[in-house]
Image (cartoon, rainbow, N blue to C red; front, top):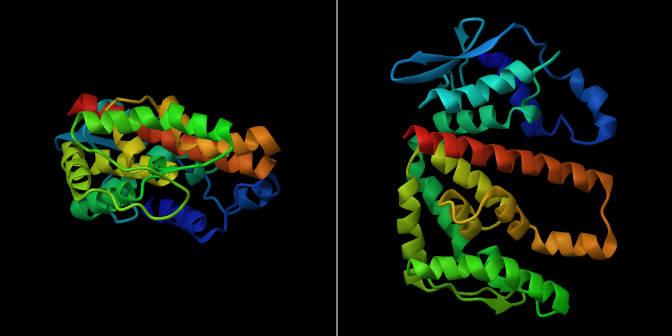
Length: 264
């Protein structure tokens, strides 16, 4: 069981499996065949595991995949039930996120928090365009409220035009790091790291985790520049597919985080 999922995830990590339309038929041959009839969330050892025909799912690190509550476990069980002919990890973002939390984040929470905080030191929302005016206004519309929110709990970040590095006040970074400790849980941090890496902004990620923004508003804030360019020059199919996959990862991380918070 573990080897099957590990092989599938490895194929994604190596780039053997592509997102393009032309790659799909080839990719299907790389995925392991579905071998079970039903996935269920089962209470066990103070949490919930995901069982495939009664056999617990294990992570690539050989640990039983345990979630803190039934709702979060059911999100993952639903992914396994949604599989048709093959086990496609590209369509199982909650499973991948939970594997990351159980195998990696649980033993490296301080390192993960430090990595997220590094994004805050050069955060997307602090680097502004000088022109065109339409883009300048869009950035202000989406990003200024996030900075105002951060300032409301004492973290005052500097902004500037262009790409020249902005040295942020040490106090702002320290306050951000302190606020991040409210989410010191492997599943929460795994979700926060997904928000951060997809959006390029630790401030957007924290605003989403703190429910200052919902997923749609956070996504829009993260893609102001990209959306502006699309409005001016159009988009291509492969870029749309990549963006669609990122949205799935982003929104599922939000769904899993909300479930974990409710179960705490």
